[in-house]
Image 1: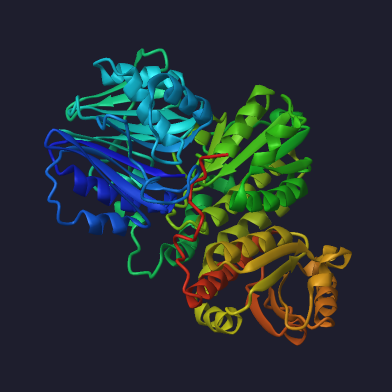
Image 2 (image 1 turned 30 degrees about the vertical axis):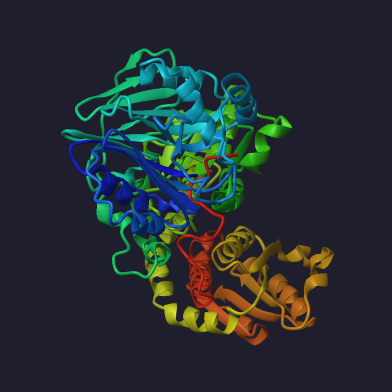
Length: 609
């Protein structure tokens, strides 16, 4: 989940790298560091804490270097500290490495380096092994040494490597961790993600798995694992660099909450043709294809998993195909029943989530057709899928996902409608009704966003709570899980979600006087059942905040506080009900003084298992 940046060219490498790291701070922010070739040797500076600590520490150095690498860290091996921060250097101080990922056999390699080569280790990281390993393999050619070292490594990694003996060369390697190369004039770049490069370049290479890149200021050469030169099409980035800026909002998360009407509208309208025909980005899925599926698997992690919960609900309802949803980190360890009659839907905001990638590869190995829902064009999940359905949310910078989630939901509705109509089990009148209601969602979200003050006032009464329960039924269950996750990840409140009918099977034992319960009751068909659940927790002293449709005024008589969402079909309420929950989490976290865009212990793109 770390972020890496590298530069070689004619400009000031330090300024470019620091600026790029700031754009990647969402990937990790335990510590940061930089390695620059300066006056014949490598200058290494690295510090625990945010990138601002590094920036302040080197402010007076006036570096002139035109080549270097930098890193912002999310700790896996070794606690956050100055010593464990990247870059790591070889024992002779000639080679520096930055690394995103995990070296699985680092203990074995470390023991070998100590025993056979007398290497002395100074950190508790797996990454330090790489720097020493490249030094041991170095015999006058850095490219040779990197290839030899990588052959000895197991795991997932993106690497940036520089060497004081070859000060015109930057080498990068990709295996199961994201890496892009920026192509400039007299300047070339590497980074973990595109936003780090947008200030400087729009032409990039998307680096494939098991590829090595050798960069000088005037040339970029790609090699495969067999060291054969690879030709690659240039990818032109079209989205605006300003999309990755706050634009006057206090936090990226708040900005991204407000961008949801635009993202949802774009995700929907790009797929609608004449006569409300849905076009799945050129994906060909015939009636015979759909009828051949005996099962749909939706596999994802975190917020994407919660989108999958809604996806299961709507695909089963509209397409009449059994759907299983699984956490990606568990999927491949239980020998799942997947074959050539399975549609496997992988959901990932970044398209680089390692657990989801591993599950996808297992499903493909067993013959499943893989359809991915991702936000990042050219990401690993997208490239390794049979079919790709992009969310068009635009860059999402805040660690806590908002607009990626709601655009994932819209993708789920479109897939379900397409499958149901094509299969012939969804009457055209019902199909049309769903689409007409989906078209109204962006404006209805704008209506909710206009009630931001209501949510702010609600947050003022709730932010001191240390325990919260979210409950719901039907389509509200997945939203309850997502609302709970948003609250816990940015406010650090102990938050728990459960299907409301399960309360009495154990969890209600935790309800006591003044316990906060957030009750979603947006399903007309289940509204009476939810009122019963609300009465159950109120009888035990709970303080209830209810969410319901505008016409269900009975909620106001049952709950202590209520927020009403606009009227819509039961099945599509998740696109609306999650919006006030996102805002509530945001304003509670703000009142608690939390670092909303960079919550502790978290990172945006989870590229380790």
